[in-house]
Length: 102
Image 1 (cartoon, rainbow, N blue to C red):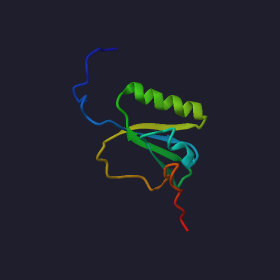
Image 2 (cartoon, rainbow, N blue to C red):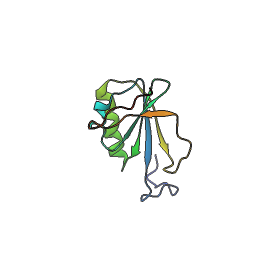
Image 3 (cartoon, rainbow, N blue to C red):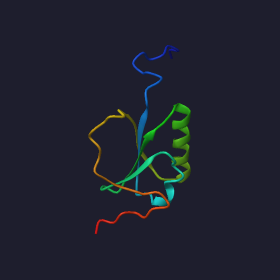
Image 4 (cartoon, rainbow, N blue to C red):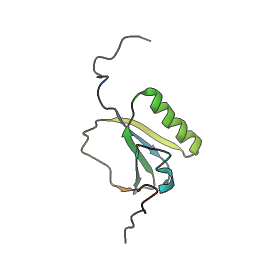
């Protein structure tokens, strides 16, 4: 394993991750995953998206997922300007109510 830095990765660049979980999380989890957007996907899964400051913070998020007991489907680093967002239903924070489709 090399100790050389990857010249393609800028340490000042915003790093955004998408963490996909099996099943829908209710709005009560918004506070626990502070700073991440919780989106409910039409296929029944949940997508957590947000800025992660470093690898330690990413591992902290993954520990929360583990502690939640929900199956982890994927973890992807994405371009902050990525235009092709999935079709999802947002979950609002604890002070707001979940939007209904009716």
